[in-house]
Image (cartoon, rainbow, N blue to C red; front, side, top):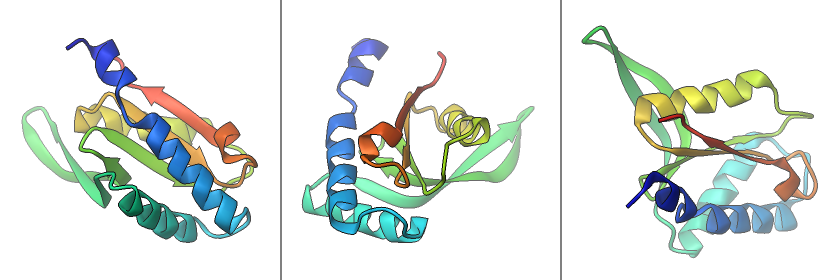
Length: 130
């Protein structure tokens, strides 16, 4: 299976649908933790496999650096999802997701800003470079 096919079958539609439902129920203006807890409930109800607060480790020149990042969500062991509640996403937000993709080996990250209405306008797909 090619990388492009893997990215096309990446659960993005399901993840974004769950985020839309969370925002429909909760609205905007809450803390990131509220959206994270609600998204976990929504993903579970939709029977989408996920883990929260996932530690990622890395190595430097063959030596372990230990935990270097904590991913908000890992969906179906293939997609990193990070949530934010900010006025606007910035380069640092994107760089953090890219770094998480690099150390995890995953190909796709979704950066979701719940402070944007509708939330679909706050979703950014980040694809790692091969």
